[in-house]
Length: 267
Image (cartoon, rainbow, N blue to C red; front, top):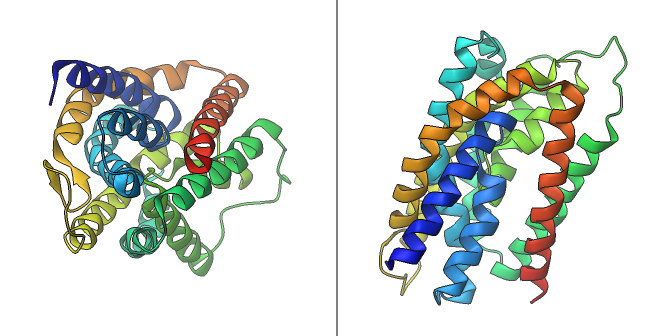
């Protein structure tokens, strides 16, 4: 790996770690487009680059989620009973998601990623107020939501915050609690998704050097090492920002990244 790529990955880790703590997204919405961009510039095979970016992103979330959730837990903001209710479905879905992704061409996967995060951004920016009586669903509903969150997160390489934060806000959970709880959900998503990407990727012939399955180990190591230092800073900022500003930051960021992935998929 050349020095310029290493510096770019460290800078990406610093930025995505802060975003992971700030927005509870695990950093995946940032790392997938940027790793796709960096690896494409270094000549990674076009038909594999998005799959590798998604798998590597999930590996990075293993580390950023631990770092950010510790900071949120110190503020008493993580709703651990909610984490326990969502986790079983998330583990199953996060294992299935990468297998589904491996059956989809890289360009189509990029387009799906772009459309889905655009939808998530619109939901956050609309800032619709839920009915005061709405609350989190029962066991069956939480299991189904966990399964959907895990499957989509494993498919696009994200920590689940793009689904779980709007979902919890829609159920009248405070945005600060939703962000903190989403950060905790990132670990089971990343654990199952990373292992699945390793197993599925090992069946792919002619993988580039430095990969374990679909996970590109040098990028995972460099981005993670920087991200774990900045994730607690983002978590502190999340508790200082007003709710409306936090939602706007979340939405604008997602729109920008959706645009890049849309161009990538169409190109």
